[in-house]
Length: 419
Ligand code: C2O
Ligand code: CU
Ligand code: CU
Image 1 (cartoon, protein in one colour):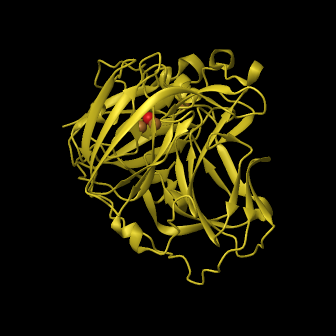
Image 2 (cartoon, rainbow, N blue to C red):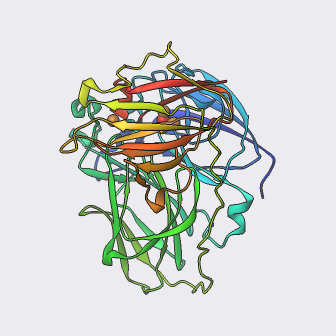
């Protein structure tokens, strides 16, 4: 079923979505009224994508977590597509199976464009993942769950300017896969959820009714080395987690609810399903951390401040300035610090373009078992230093930043060149 070559045209466009009863909401989407159909790519594929902008302002198409080289192909703010225009990108994908995503990145209006509805899941498949006994029937037992929140104003409209907050815009209504109050019909014993925090600022604290146990199998950049059983999971902005939920304790007619804190966000309606006696694999992926030359210094990255005063390494973003360099193929530890006060300071989700890194430690302590896989975004708590191991495999200029999108737009961002 996988062809060596694929072509897509992705159009960023205005739309109208029936999100609430009554008037439709004016929205933006990718080939859709809001969000966009999931794009499924395969490791090894030659990918050709035409990026069309039918919006009234410039945008970019950023492939968050996809291993594509440099700011033009990866769609950072260096790659504007002007209204009414189109660009073409071509790349060969070499990447492990993962859940990544597409979103706009035109500095400094990324946050507002995401708020209008621009985001889509991008799934990468590979042979190894296909050889494991995991749910993978897209739309049936394998679904993306894009977690967002919005506020609705008069006539059911979004009003980004009215809601603006330099520490990140939030709303009281969960919008999951572009739907208010969604449900899903469960027709299999096991369901794989590809959870994506696509919110501008919100952290999700996820758990099911009955404290139902679930198994996390993947993080941002692919499978975990070993499956991890959980009852609660927190995601910060842009983080992904693939979890498998086993409904064998339930019967047709039952309902299982996914909550974030106390808010029900998805209802799973259980139907008849066939039992699947084969257990899930426990070991999923061999990860060999790259070797670090002891002569390589540790890179220090400092995220500081809140609201308009946010900075990265004491500076605001400047697109004309390269802030750091790292040779292609060289592994380096980065110590990423959040200087916010431990009482009341914000978590800054730290993201790097064009790479998948490993989390080594948090304040010198072992990282959590469900963050032992490849990551491109990590929540750095107030007062915490997270050590990560970073390597770029392709030359290019890559941005790194806080993924609270208003912080990113507010200049909490820098760029590194790998050569
Ligand atoms: Cu998800 Cu620089 O982005
Ligand atoms: Cu990114
Ligand atoms: Cu931040």
